[in-house]
Length: 136
Image 1 (cartoon, helix red, strand yellow):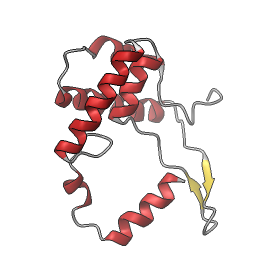
Image 2: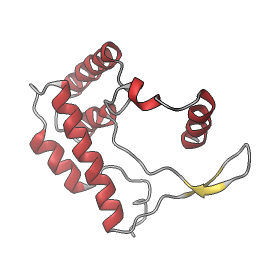
Image 3: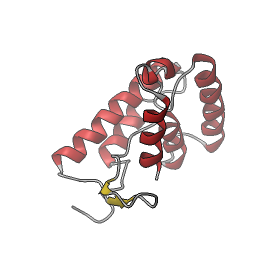
Image 4: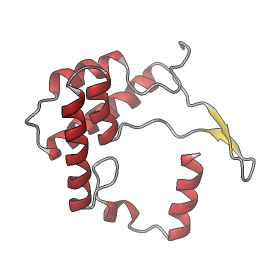
């Protein structure tokens, strides 16, 4: 595995797909679908190339284990449009602001999924413990 692949999110074939499938007039539901396909593609690439996550030690409890696999969020996809020259910085900034408003209006998480569905059935302790270990 080439150096850095364990932490890489944007592989060349993903960027090619992003460049070809993204359009300025895309609706947010279409952007979320594109995000879903890019996230699936990322996990497929990591699996096929046997790329595992780096090992991490929790500073609180000392537990060692693999970090959570990287995921593509809608915002990361929007920022990649500007970062890789697919669109202008001004359009990227505008789309990022519009996404934040849309996300708040529709109660969506970072990946474009309903916050209500995501936390259904979890107690507050389960979600906060999981989150704290994954964020570190």
